[in-house]
Image (cartoon, rainbow, N blue to C red; front, side):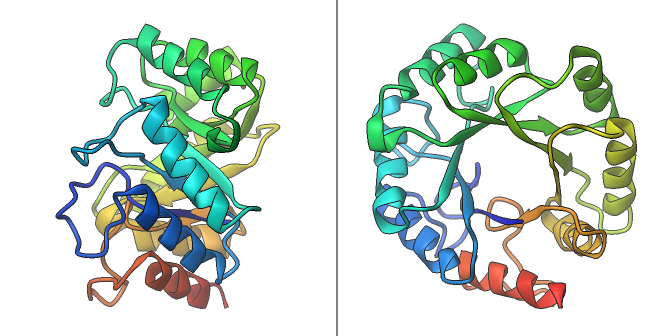
Amino acid sequence: MLQAVLNGSRPADAHPALPVTARHLARDARAVALHGVSSVHVHPRGPDAEETLDPVYVSDAVAAIRSEVPGMEIGVTTGRWIQPDPRLRIQAVQSWGLLGTGKPDVCSVNVHEKGWVEVCAAAAAVGIGVELGVWTGGDAVTLRANGVPPGTVRVLAESTVPDPETAVAEGVRILRALDSLEVPVLLHGEEDGAWPVLEFALRNKLDTRIGFEDVLTRPDGWLGTGNDDLVETALKLRY
């Protein structure tokens, strides 16, 4: 699987084509769907263009994407940097279960964040799947010690090392620490490490992802023209 990550935590002015509004997220979801992408991950924004877990704006983003691409898997974040209080993150996830067509299919939960087990339980209770973010070998050990929570659809092995010379090695360390799991593992990198990690994942037939959340440039160093441009480039590397 190739997932498209459309915006992430980047500021609105990080790229002229960065999708921030619900309408623009839906536009980009439609564009990547034309390349066969069936899963997107987005960070909904409020009127101030800042990330939010508010159900009003989460619903706006998810419903807009679903209207444009009805069969798309739509994931959102539960990042601690957006809401530091785990109790409020849990309440936000619980509220998403009431959103109808604006209800996310999955949400990402980072294993290193306080309250991650409870956030996962809240998602499962309202029928939202979980993508578990594992950023380090230590996170992988924590996950194995706790067990994969019910409702987990995949584990995200996230090499956060931006150095292209060491990003793949870090990804491999995380994969080895995870060992074998009963759910799929999606491996990806960030910034200058994004393309080397993606190529490694493709060679090893692992799920992976690409998009403006992870990198703004193509492997040749040129700025990507859009999320669909990055997806198209990634698909060409697969063959």
